Picture 1 (cartoon, chains in turn red, green):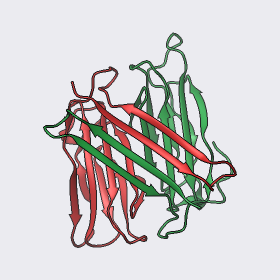
Picture 2 (cartoon, chains in turn purple, green):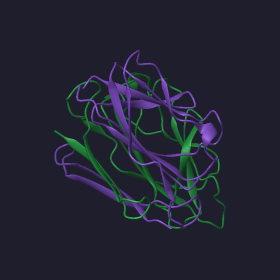
Picture 3 (cartoon, chains in turn brown, orange):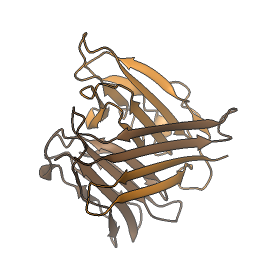
Amino acid sequence: MATTIASINITSTDLLSDSLSLSAIATLTGAGNSTGLTHTEGLGRKTLASGHAQYTLFDGTNRTADKAHKIYLKNLSGTAAEYFLITVNGEDMGRLYAGDWAFFPWSAHDADNDIKIDPSADDMTLEYMLFTDD
Amino acid sequence: MATTATLTLASADIAGDPVSVTKTATLTKAGSTNDLDQSTGLNRVHLRSTTNKVLLAANAEGDNLAAKVYIINKATDASLYVTVTINAQTIGKLYAGDFMFIPWSQTDTDADIEVAATNWTASTGDIPVEYALFHEDTDFLTNA
């Protein structure tokens, strides 16, 4: 059993009239148990060189449904206007702008439950990682 | 005015070499370097419904403006999970202690973020969930 820790800190000294400091630590475990996630696909990068068409980053067909998959994404662009539109099974989740990251669970509940990315410009690079008990 | 979000992923033994990823994002408005300036603050609800409940209602004026959503399942029982959906499309399950941080486009007014305590029963007790929205849409004045 492996031990993988994910932590988040959200801070601001001036968004509100009081300082904001929000933090959480999660030990990534299997679905419904306390056994640490056992697999990762490592840290990867995908550059979509031209045409900036939608690309399937994670294919639901290749995953067991309702495991405790966790996905990390980061837009490595340095141009503020450039974003990746993230979709799950065709539903827009949101736009990941330059420098933004996302971390979320993924159910992969059926073959259509792909995670797709659609860059707003050519030659954009996304960094990604998957942790799973699959 | 700046709000930052830092994620750290670390494991000494999930792979042959250690995993250590730390990334910080400054939360900015869509397509600019101007900081996000709106927030719902940190909210807490206690879920006891196995059917979807609206956590954050999409707002037409928020279409493709920058918005970041933080949700955490504060349950301590490993078996208790919260199913998170956008426009009825399941994103994933947050097990006890798990959190998520995602961009939210509010592409249409059906793009509500909903949660369900899918395996809740009267004997499991409520599932506490905390959430916060950081955004730029000044028309987003109320929670669901």
